[in-house]
Amino acid sequence: MSQGQFFARDEVQRDALDGFELGWHSRPETTAAEQLVVIEVKLDPGGGHNFHRHPNQEEVIYVLDGEIEQWVDRRKQTLTAGDSAFIPAAMVHASFNVSAAPAKVLAILAPCIGAEGYELDEVHEQSPWNGLRSSG
Image (tube, rainbow, N blue to C red; front, top):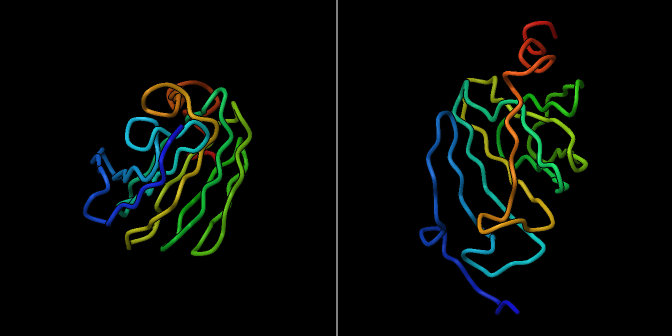
């Protein structure tokens, strides 16, 4: 069983990727969490996480700051601070910062899967996902 923990903002493990940065607030590797993966995601202007899915995990995306174009399956909506989206397990989704300012979201996934805590299938190169944004 996991013990409760505190993390100052400068103690959060961060990973920089192309167009976004991840801040790991909870995952098995750092907290021994079994049920919750919590990730702070900073999206650069023009950046985002292209179409993907988590086969066995549900997810909530909560916008902390800025504005994002959120896709859930083939539907899109602009979300701003205080807005959220629920994504059922295995549903394709994507988040893009289409504004000129940085955006920040909190992604919460459950249950934990593997050492990283989450599983990911990138599908942005597959049809229909590879043409969805240009057509919609």
